[in-house]
Image 1 (cartoon, rainbow, N blue to C red):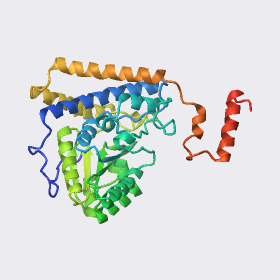
Image 2 (image 1 turned 30 degrees about the vertical axis):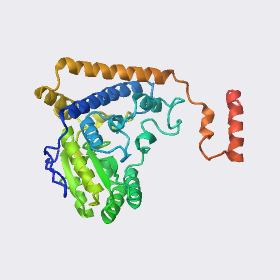
Image 3 (image 1 turned 135 degrees about the vertical axis):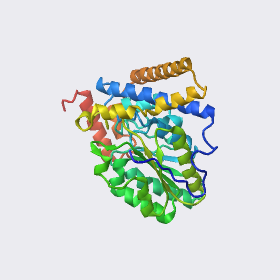
Image 4 (image 1 turned 120 degrees about the horizontal axis):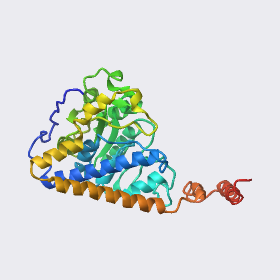
Length: 360
């Protein structure tokens, strides 16, 4: 990893100040991280069993996601990539809603119109994820500009990986945000691999955060395994944005323990020794060790946290799996406010085909 050397944001508190997360919030952060880890491990297993169709793991990035989410206000808008499940959990999204979407049952909020793992939660200001790399970056800037015009004191935050810094939308989004001082936080989870492409094959820049210099606003490098450091960096960036000072690029340096997605085999491009070395900085373990050292957590209480998370996941999965599947004809719903004559005819034809077992 590149050297960790956070810079103090203009008009904000320095990282490591007395504004750190209080003990009760640190313990809460740990609970979120454990829940995210349990969900992640189980969903990877479920996909291998054929019980969900696709999944993008996040293990190794829980500290970065939880720390960032805790620094935001409820009115802020989340523009995720496709592995920000921990962010969704902190924002109040239920395990049941997540599993409904991954399974694609009749209570899936997206009504089966999205890929698994491409979540959207309107109640939590969590915008729909999409597969094209970096598109959420320009979308976040546009939404921030709209809030700016309306004089709404909120920010947007775009989550993306190191690979997205090579996309056209990264340049367009950061350049536009810099020119118009958009209240946007660009949160890069540098997990060292853009699928199989290592970071050093993408850019010779010492850090990804320094790319913000070209667009006229601060870039900050932070240890993404340190939930408190991430919290402070994002909170400072948010304070800066709502004060009218403009955007910030935060580079959280992490490591993706698992595959890019369930369609990926990371053993083809990295060694077990590399992963084992990265696991020595597991954010979940680091926070647990810190909490025990501060006498905020005991081993017995830690075991209970993990058991509670596993029970909660199992209950959500059971309910989601026994929920009725989506009606295949729902594909014709929500296309227009009311179905057009042609769409109505297509629906009638599809219904007849289903009744005949596809013989027509």
